[in-house]
Structures are given as C-alpha cells and as structure tokens.
Image 1 (tube, one colour):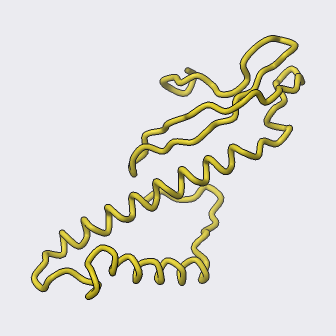
Image 2 (cartoon, one colour):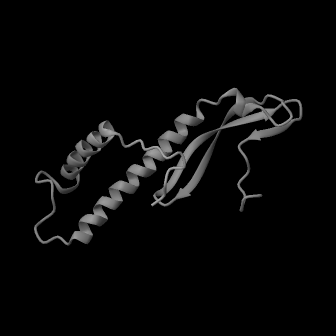
Image 3 (tube, helix red, strand yellow):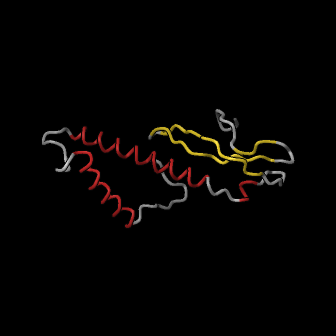
Length: 130
C-alpha cells in the first residue's frame, strides 16, 4: 500500500466515524433492506462489491479534490522561472488514468503575455523529462 510522503494521516477519529456511518448506509443501498447478501454468498463476492464501491469513492474524491484545488491558483504558481506573471485565461479538461479509474478535472489555463507562451497546462508527455 502506498505511504503518504509527509507521514501524516487524514484518518482521524472523526473521519473514521463518518466512514463507518457511510459503510452502514451503503450496505443498505447495495444489498437492500437487510444490509447484507444472501447467506452462502462467497466472501470473494463481498470483497468484490466492497472494492467496486471503494474504487468509485476513491475516484470521486480525487476528481472533486483536483477540480476544487484547480479553482484556487496562488500567484506563486503563476510566476515563471524568469519572474513573469502568467494570466489565467480559462480552464481545460484534464484526464488522468488511475488504479480506480479515470479522474477528470478542469485545469487552469494560463498565458505569459510578455513571452507569448502558454504556461498551463503542460502538454502530456512520457517519462520524467517529457
């Protein structure tokens, strides 16, 4: 399992409690009023159901977080290496394929007026050096 690079966890007691409540609610939505599958359902099937819900939750959390974060661009992110300040000129859809599925958000688009270059978004590339 991937580890957080800052060593912190967001799974404090309040988050854990809310996840417990959501799991209880989702069992009813998935399995009906009784909240569980029929007796004899293999555990592998229950695990598969949980993974499907989990991956969709992960995907939605990443998608919503990325989209919201992209709406608040600090001035430090708009400054080029030469010191020129880019101007926001709109947003462009960005898609990333993750283990949990496609994540899409509207990435800010910026332009450097003095040097007449696009600043965001970077163009898709392969490898660390693009």
